[in-house]
Figure 1: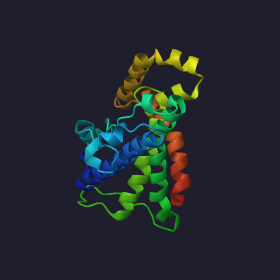
Figure 2: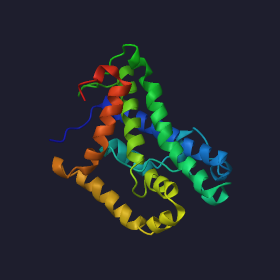
Figure 3: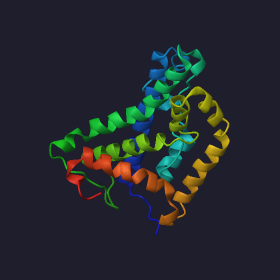
Figure 4: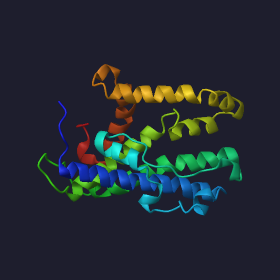
Length: 221
């Protein structure tokens, strides 16, 4: 049965999605700049100001249903010193930044802090709840964005990792890849566990990383 989130849960989602998106998009822009592409810098979007790159519709969707296109940093591989490897670094930087953010937020849990979860009547989230949600969400974004389907980062990463000829052939199936991606999203909302392929992809590495970063969860997820 669908239940409305508490005020504390809404605040947590908004804060965590905003920070995670901000770090993700800045990492794309900064890595692209280091690879020779000044597009984001020239347009004023190589910044940690979360309101510059945010997609408001996607952000509100993420808060409401847990999924949305949060933002986008302009990256142009044709301005990079090396199109193939420069683009690979720039695109990979986003998910890696989410992983690093999850690791940083998990440090207090290594020293005995225990995760907290907001109750249905809570108004403000606690600091442990905020840290746990930051770890959990950033790990999801790290894994999710590595799925090799368009428009996720994993699609471009795949095209740049394989030999150029194979990458050119795979690029022709970008639209079909996008259809598969949206089909997986729709199946995840149907509510039938057997059809939730996306959860089957995300949960094993997510649970492994959660137990690795938050020792108290070992054996429980």
